[in-house]
Image 1 (cartoon, rainbow, N blue to C red):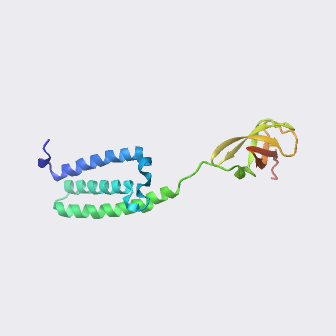
Image 2 (cartoon, rainbow, N blue to C red; image 1 turned 90 degrees about the vertical axis):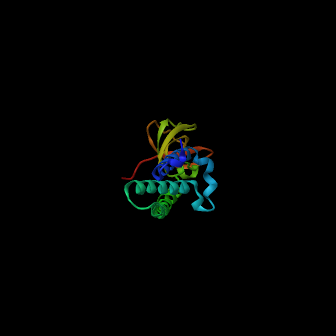
Image 3 (cartoon, rainbow, N blue to C red; image 1 turned 120 degrees about the vertical axis):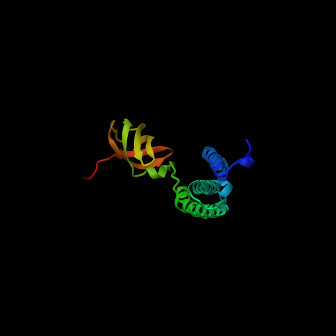
Amino acid sequence: MDFHTWSIEQWYLSLLIILAICMVFYLFFCDMVEGVGEGIPFLNPAVILAFLTFYTAMGWVLETFTALNSISIAIISVIAAIILDILLYYFVLIPLKSAEVSMAYTEESLGGQVGKVIVPVPVDGYGEVVIETVNGIISKRAASYDLVEIPYDAKVLVIEVKESTVFVREYSPIF
């Protein structure tokens, strides 16, 4: 394979394929290079790879389908890649970075939640309840707050949480 005889379209297309492969590897191994772009946002590998991909894609399209000279195409491709990269950064990457959702919950956040008894709660012992939250279904050990027996499948209200045990009472909605 003689690289000296390649046309500019072949160079653009080859670089585009190589960058696509790099993007796939970056998707798999992005956690290893996560902190690289923290100080200077435009040194983020995702931004750099996106810029190079936009540049080579635009260059290949313009070289293949227009009659412009190569220098004009390179300048147009750089300007278009910069604009697309800025749009990608501000409208996709920044919102994704700030939209991280945690599946964690605190025991204090369970207070006031309504659950369902799956193991009956005896007067002086422990049963089990499930509580549906936005994070999923949480199963917790339960004790009666009022020291009364709570049967299976009863709706309960979590009054307080101590040492991973929820203290509940039967729930009866007002309406």
